Image (cartoon, rainbow, N blue to C red):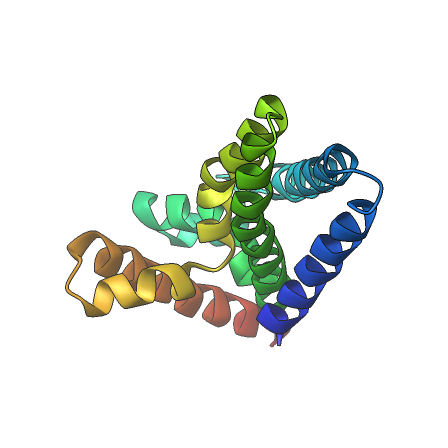
Length: 170
């Protein structure tokens, strides 16, 4: 459900930016780049400012690698549906950035084109942190050892988090 919501929000953003294109490509590109980067910045800052402390009670039950994993993917653990929506939104804008980038470069709007294409590379890490199963699951199935180990750590942290929450409720 979260992925569908995020894709829908990305589609709305792309369509709104494209409608501005009736005025000019430059206005459309400025609209797209502004919205895309503002959304990325909001999500990035919310990810940074909500990162749990290393001294949180749950972290005391974990090994150092598990703490690192918990802190890296905390939005995925706390709000999986919202994290999936954010990930899909950013990824949809990421793909659309190539279309805007190509058009801008073709029309000589080099700064806007560069900013649109750079968005693809800038957002990748955050997208992965928000929805690790989607982006590492296939790689793990193909035998990528790093992806497999990371997903195993995520499973262990999720199990410890669920046990901790159940204990707190009891």
